[in-house]
Image 1: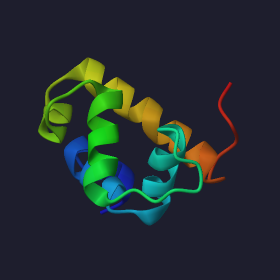
Image 2: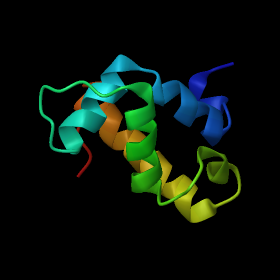
Image 3: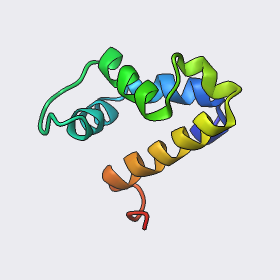
Image 4: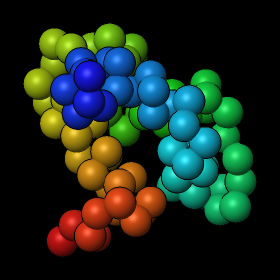
Length: 85
């Protein structure tokens, strides 16, 4: 199944285990060049999406929108897409 077709909580779990997303989270958190663990990346994601658990992304539409925005920012940072305006 393509990543984009997975439920948002599952996407979030996969992202937090991605070393590139961990570097993105570290940079965004003020640790440029630093390395975050999966759990630190998960905390960053929860803060950005304003949820207590990634499971909330399955039912909270506002949080899901925040998550989609975060994914877009990460994809732009990683060079996968053009930088959003």
